[in-house]
Length: 86
Image 1 (tube, one colour):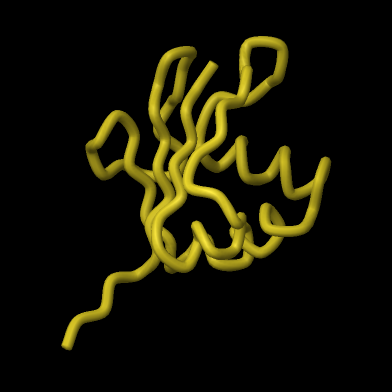
Image 2 (tube, rainbow, N blue to C red):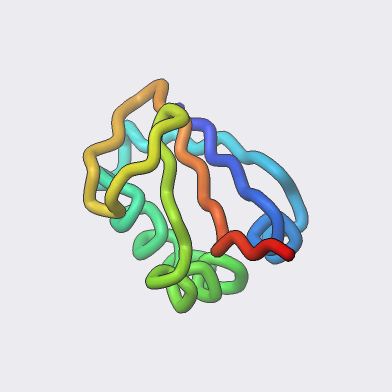
């Protein structure tokens, strides 16, 4: 199982702050694979997240990473929208 966290506008998109997904039986090896798989399987917010990928940051185990960074059972994956300040 991996824990997926959604922040700010992405949390609003999914209407929840976290979910758990069992990736062991799936061919998911990265955050990119995760979003691609679920955008095809479920559509909805996953498809929208895929569209926003270029502007969305990924953290794996609380460290900023590239979308293609490997993920494994027990990891925490967080999706963060662009940060704006004022």
